[in-house]
Amino acid sequence: MPERSQFWELREAYEAAFRELAHRVRTLQALGGQAEADVRELEECRLRVAEALETYRERRDRLAALMLASAADGKERDFARAAVSGGSPL
Image 1 (tube, helix red, strand yellow):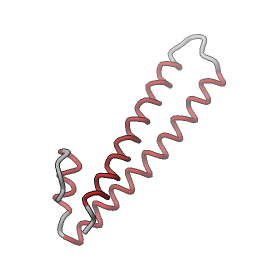
Image 2 (cartoon, one colour):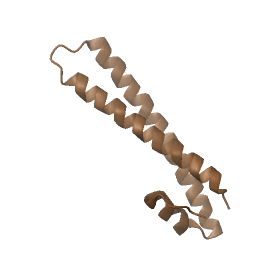
Image 3 (tube, helix red, strand yellow):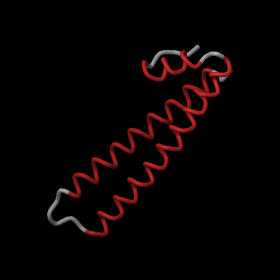
Image 4 (tube, helix red, strand yellow):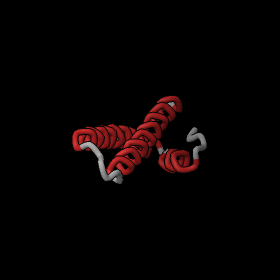
């Protein structure tokens, strides 16, 4: 059975990655909406979005793997509920 601290550590990392991705996308959208946007700055911003997306996916997958591994212990509902509601899985 996964430890509570491992779940919360992975969940916080996932949420932080999502916040960073959302921030990067908003920045790209704002920059893309400017008529005189610098092409190099726009491309660098796109690269940052791609990096943030990669980090988000990696952290999401690690959290999902932990939650799926808990299925063998009969805890899948508890972890899924905690992931959605913000409650404790244990």
